[in-house]
Image (cartoon, rainbow, N blue to C red; front, side, top):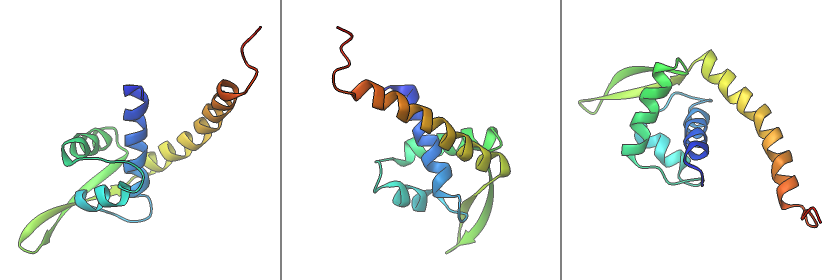
Amino acid sequence: MDTQLKRGLLDICVLAAIKTEDSYGYKIIKDIKPYMTMSESTLYPILRRLEEAGHLTVRSVEHNGRLRKYYHLTDAGRQKLKDFAEEWKEIMEIYEYVIREGNDNE
């Protein structure tokens, strides 16, 4: 898969994982696992990038004597998910064109 496309899909999956409730790293990885494999070394740079872009915020909460970072989707993050859904419609139209039988331009 194209690296840039995969990177964009990873970002969207992380946002989708926290759209209904705040979450933390391990849980995000667990929630995404049925759809794609993601390691901690992949997740945390994505979370930092999304935070810097204003798509999520982070807060620390003590849990079992350690600080756990919880991530929260911002309005900008919700808009990014909406924009993705609209763009995906266009991507699906292109996909349908590409896989269409008899599309050999002869």
